[in-house]
Image 1 (cartoon, one colour):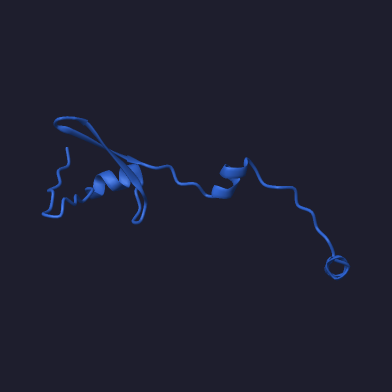
Image 2 (cartoon, rainbow, N blue to C red):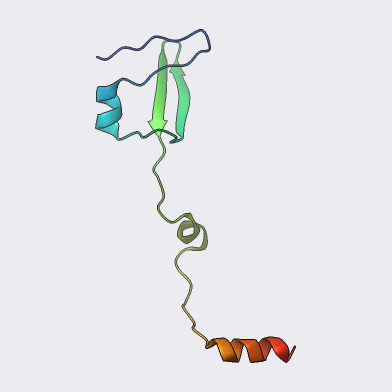
Length: 77
């Protein structure tokens, strides 16, 4: 089992073999949870490629409009 030391600032380095196995990359957000008196769980958040798609439930319908028609609509306002 890999080990890591807690620094004076309470920071811990995730050992290389664990990082590679889990796929953690620099800058990723992880959650930290106290399980019991002697156990801490660190979980990797699943990364989302398109967060907007998750928020709205899919991509919107693509409607295209010619630039000249769009400009006409703007001018008529």
